[in-house]
Length: 370
Image (cartoon, rainbow, N blue to C red; front, side):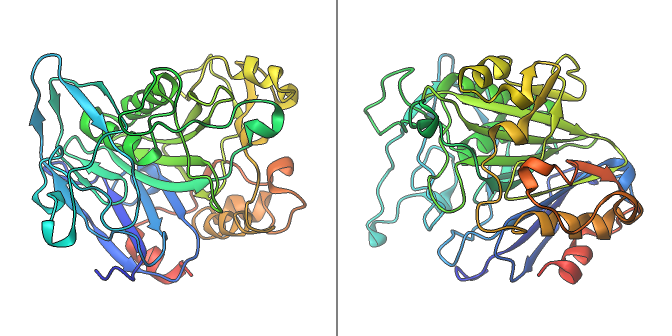
């Protein structure tokens, strides 16, 4: 794979023995459009997540296998900065020879931003820019999303931790890249993954890249049995996080196209929704409670998204087209390609009843991704 290529990675949990990368497809997409399908929406009962990694020509293209590891008592896990250009990491902590520092390229051992408590054993997994698929068959797709700016609402700007200069509780330690890797190392199910990532982000802080693509993140998390959509953004303290997750019904398909999609959440029903417990209180403090008044009624997207970050239809038209292809009956009856405001109007659901069982994600993407 050339460093000038971007592409679509397709991961499926149909295999029971070992994690497998199913496909890499060169595409011309200019945004990260990611899909998630429940087991009854695929022909063979796979739970599926896809990821178009359209980070640009300098994105580190390597797919590597991080081995399973055992760790001593009271070990600490280093948390590193996560540039997505080459090299995305230089050091020995992951046990991958491809990451060992190369003196010929003036590479040195990276210094962590900080540390968290380590667990006794960690799973082996495949990773690219993000953690992708672990040996417990937990897989991840990603799409960067816009998020509201707390500093514009009277809150604090996110304070990203710096190497060897971390004041506990006063800076944000985790990017989405490192959250996904902690999931890969520790989670045996998609539900456990979103709980681990949400807890790490709340406890140690989350930061997003403050640029064109937005400061929020969405991960589509699957295992052999179910799939979850996970959203996260920084909180107004500057060193915490707000997160929400929704289980995708087994016969549904969901799409995230660089904008949050989770709408009304009822956190009293943890079988369907998980997330930050004080979301309503934070919303009320910053005059955002119109659509997030309680744990049983909180529209995550209307409350915490900053909308389509490039132009009107940038996210919505991709959502509509994916639903038109994969949930055609529902789309024909309920959805339209036009709208006034994607965030405020809520024209599209976070997932929809699949029209047909998808037989091959790679075939769908190669024919329909532009």
